[in-house]
Image 1 (cartoon, helix red, strand yellow):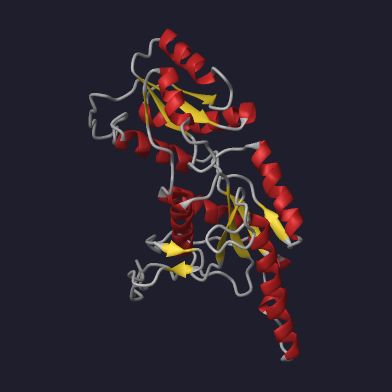
Image 2 (image 1 turned 120 degrees about the horizontal axis):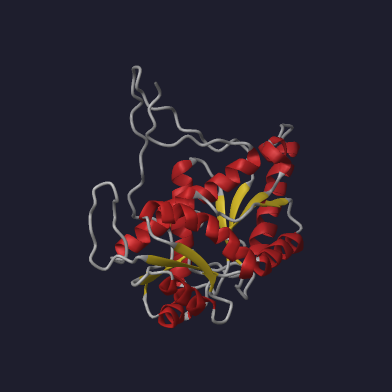
Length: 312
């Protein structure tokens, strides 16, 4: 497990593989450009050890995809700007901007150009919300934190909809024994659901966005998938009734959520309301870290190469 500033001491360090020769050699990995702005992960929800572990893992995945990436974590709901464990988002951004300004000043004093001022975008940070779908209330708060920090920062879109999220949902369902792990091999699960409720937060906008990923998940599972909002009273139960009315017998709730953005107990209450089982939230599934990096890279015009892809 890494920390917000790098790998934890005592843990194994991933070493680069030897460069292969020949026609099928792997490409040299893309590295973060010199002077690139920091990736700041904006984490919603009450901070705590479990949330910190999740955020650390997401950042670790992003770093493994783009060596040299400078990444930090800011907590939207932290109450202590000076906290070493759970710093507020605006404090992290302000500190990042101050450090870049100090490095630029040192470079000027030494009579050389600073990577911080000549790097891509002229930004201090790119802020990526740790959200699978849109939540206008949370996005407004993240945007306000960016403004309060006075840092030169760009806020990206949320992570979904995206086919990788459909894959992650499929995996979480199969882990819970609620879906076949692999349609191609016809691996059957006796408890597999024949109707999926995609649970999200953020109101109708979030439901519509989740529905796009839901269609991709439905194609993977060959069962109906319908989205409903956890934060709309009775929405989960109503969707369960609709699915049962159309012929589904065994339902399952699939959280279209990373985890920290939803209040404790809300998913359990949703499963009880729908009278069915529920999969785990997406958490630090590898696709989440890759999508976080994708949002960061897109804002800077970087294209990290997929590790392990051969060059033909």
